[in-house]
Structures are given as C-alpha cells and as structure tokens.
Image 1: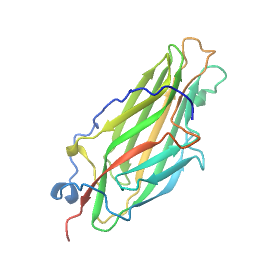
Image 2: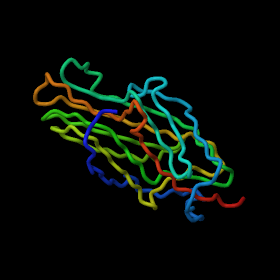
Image 3: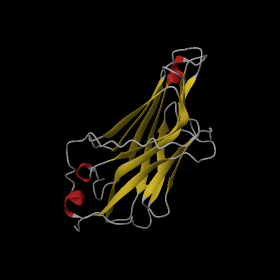
Length: 218
C-alpha cells in the first residue's frame, strides 16, 4: 500500500436518479435490520485496463451487510514518461450475488478509498456506476481531486431511500459495477501524477453496503 497521511476527505453525493423502483419488494416490504444467512458472491466477468486478470477480488462481510472489492493494479497516471493510455483506467465487474429465496437487495451506500499523488496543476477524477443486468436505471457518482496533493482519499456515496433500486424478486440478474480513474498532467509535465485505487496488501477496499428486504409472498 502506498504511504500517506489519512485525511477526512469524505464527500457525500446523492444518486442522480429521479425514478423510484416499482418492483413489489421495494413498495410493500420494510427494510431488514440485518442481511440473511447464505449470501454468496462470485465474479462472473472482469474487464478493463484497471483490473487485469487476477487483480480484483470480492468478499462478503460476515454480517452480510456489505461486500468489498479489492484491486491490486488499479492506477491512472499522467506526466513524465507515462503513455497517453495510462491517464485513464477503468474496470467493469459483473457479479453473481446469490441470496436466499424470499429476499432481495439494493445498494444504499458505497465507500471508495485510494491514494493520490497529484502535482500542482494536475487533476484526478474517480467515477463509478452500477446497475442490475437488464435494468436501464443506473446509479452514478463522480468525484474530483486537485493537485498539489499527496495523501489518502476517501469518498462516500449515499443513496436516498426513495431512489434505491432493488433486484427484482425471483430473478437471477448479475450486479454490474463500472469504475474509472482519470488523471491530467500537472503544470510541470515532466513530473508524474497518479491516482490509485489499489492495494498490494488488501488494505484498501471499495465497500458496497446492502439494503435488504423480504420479497412479498406469492
């Protein structure tokens, strides 16, 4: 993990979604306090310059309230001898979230963490979106950082209850996550600036928090 001084740089953003999920699960059942037992997650596909094969891992928390994604080679950089393609890195992960029959879930908040080394005049951007397979509703967020900055960063995106999108009950749909890092050159283009969302020791994770509900009885 790259060294830096932890800072309180959390930024809250609400989802840019105007529609309310119309699936019966979101309309009729109250949210559960805890997630059900038996939740498992497996990666279906991984694609992108920020997550080459074998460099992304997913794990469910013991309390079933969240899952984490850990990257080991997710860094965008610009300046110096960096290639032009290095300034933008992205990762698309399709996951199979298996939940016990009678339950459904949405994502109500996400914590993103990483490290920035931005020279004066450089900017860094972290973007993310996620959606269920076959569902046109997409939750999207974007955050910007400006140089000069050499530090850890963290952003937390929270979604309003009315805007939560739940997986349709009784259907198997992959949960898709798209993330992106961008960096621009600083005032002195000979110096390298970078934005990272990776961790060689697994200590930097992106955490997605579940909102659980029971599905209505047939």
